[in-house]
Length: 127
Image (tube, rainbow, N blue to C red; front, top):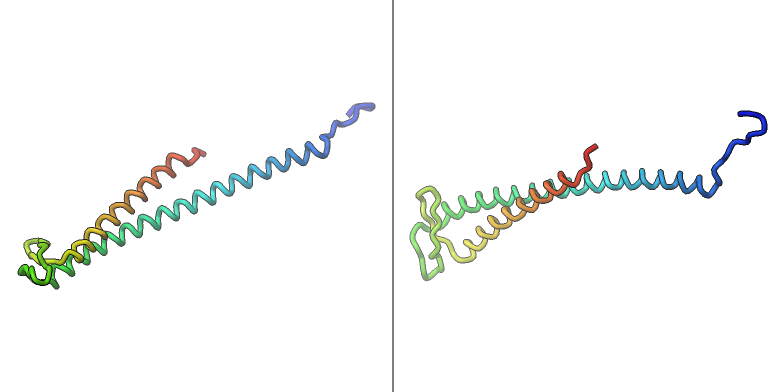
């Protein structure tokens, strides 16, 4: 520096505000990244639960198909036919409701997982 010229220094308040702003931005960036990882973990869990619900539906269908009577029994309430590759079994209303619940839950959870994953992909910054 030349003689007679003094270096210009930031006032303390302004300098701390600028540094604090940079630290705040970095903190927000880390939180956003952590929230994104947490969100993707949630999406994976939802998709896995949907997948296991679908597998449970398949297993329960096979179980009902081979462990229930092959002749309708109206007095016991077994009037709903389930055809499993040519093997017909008759189920009660409750058993059919269980099958429908598992099938619809697996489809809904998978759809929610796919929608959340698509949302996260389009929301992610390109960096």
